[in-house]
Length: 97
Image (tube, rainbow, N blue to C red; front, top):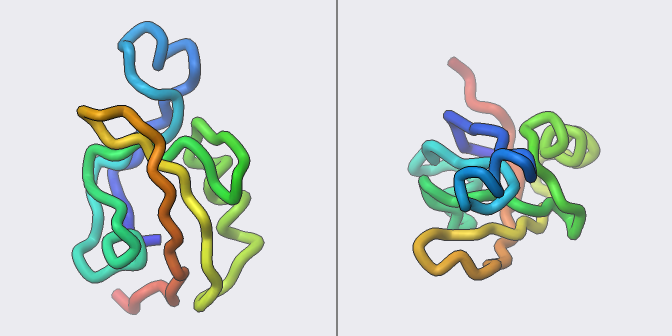
């Protein structure tokens, strides 16, 4: 997906810190699928394929059902507006390291 430094934000923690429940995106690889699809550092991924998520493990369950070249729909909350935004990213092969 092309993101890193993800932090789980379950509903209880979200309420305590007054942030959205979801998965906080700490960073985005510049040429990765997420960046190309419009995801930015500081976003909160709140749903994948229409299903609410608040952990990296939940996101991975959705992504593992898809393959390179397939689209994935994400709902994202982007501070400071905190309004839902919808993005579609196209998955890619993992780069060789």
